[in-house]
Amino acid sequence: MLSDQQLKNKCLECLLDRMIIKITFCLPGKLINDYFVVVSTRSMASKTQVGFVGLGNMGNPMAKNLLKHGYPVIATDVFPESCKELQELGAQILDNPAEVADKADRIITMLPSSPNVIDVYTGPNGILKKVKKGSLLIDSSTIDPSVSKEMAAAAEKMGAVFMDAPVSGGVGAASSGKLTFMVGGVEEEFTAAKELLSCMGANVVYCGQVGTGQAAKICNNMLLAIGMIGTSEAMNLGIRLGLDPKLLAKILNMSSGRCWSSDTYNPVPGVMEGVPSGNNYQGGFGTQLMAKDLGLAQNTATNTKTPVPLGSLAHQIYRMMCARGYASKDFSSVFQFLREEEGQ
Image 1 (tube, rainbow, N blue to C red):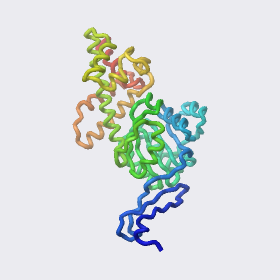
Image 2 (tube, one colour):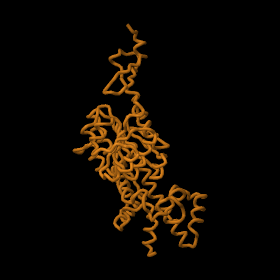
Image 3 (tube, rainbow, N blue to C red):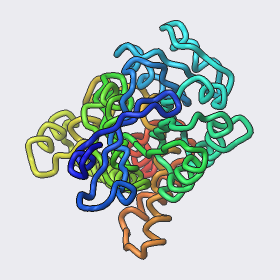
Image 4 (cartoon, helix red, strand yellow):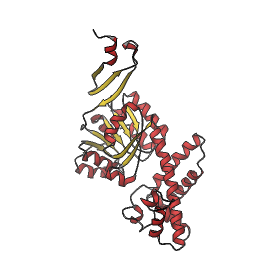
């Protein structure tokens, strides 16, 4: 018979719903029945099937990177044409999220908005209709933190684990596998999530409980919008004063005004190659999506009674742009919007 000390240090491995879960007994000094049991790691076959729902501008390259790392991908999208390229690369395409959940116990979702996430998880053909107990569900959409918490609670009732893991870096980083993931959820499951997310990103950061990943993303995007508007205003003013835009960008990027919008994603056509401003603002991160994210920031700021005057003004500008025909253009088209506003 094992002594109390041996019981304290003993690690038991048990088979639970086809997954090996390591269970560690802790809180020494108490009887074994009083111990707090922690699911510390999710030991997974590293190359088992991974589900992916949402194959848009971001989801498509993310799923491709999973394939590149040897993961069999089972995917679906509301627009069948979005699935063709991934299918040609070897992914299995199914009709709806429920079918994906029936075949995969690790699922990543990348969707445009909170209503889309609610439908994909809890709708008639949603993931939670056929989710397996013990499944790991990772949502990389940018949505309201409260919705992430609702989805986590709904998943928990079905015996699954939900984590929010929104991203930063844009389409370019999604394609190159250099995204930054901001992860919220049960800390004991972070290692399992990181295994997959590291295939798609250079930085995978644990932020705290469910919803904190979304909180970090909303703050980032509010600052990004403000920075893009400021960069556009400064570039436009300099051009009006007779400065060559490439020269001005060079000066800004070696001075204190330097920022991501000036040195990596410059909004002025002709200043940089490989960015939306050089392609009539096609591709990239849509103005409509930026307006949506700024709306999320405004809602959370109101709920927490946090003053965000520049964030509020940025939200108004991007909403105005959507009403003026810029909704589908990249958010850096705010430069073009400002030029048109002055009559050029």
